[in-house]
Image (cartoon, rainbow, N blue to C red; front, side, top):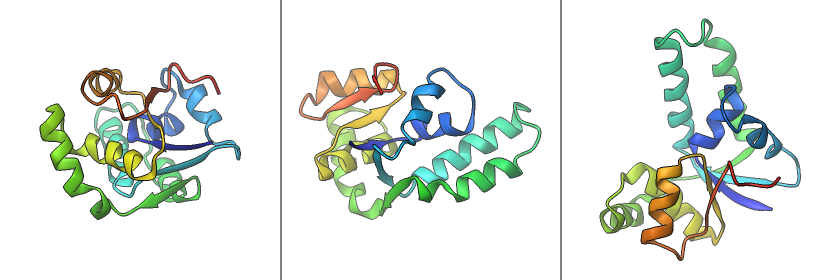
Length: 140
């Protein structure tokens, strides 16, 4: 199964959080995951925040895992989606960075998987043509 995933899902591969088990199951060969390339900077930012808040004591293992993220996600250039994402962000009144994932999903005619419930609810209400799924509801 092919899916577009966002950083809220990818962060669960790094840190034990709610629905981390479901996120880990996505790493199975039966899933083909794609994302815009800026997912790397978003996950890197999560690592930085957790280190800054003293939620992790060593950041090196997370940086090494981040370096291997390209082995599990096929990355697509941000530039392919950003213009369309701005229009979508204005349409649904939501930040562009989340809309980049949405336009990536639209561009590939794939479902979008997120752990961001508020984003999922907003997309369901404002853009029902975009298939958006919650990691919490995913039956992998």
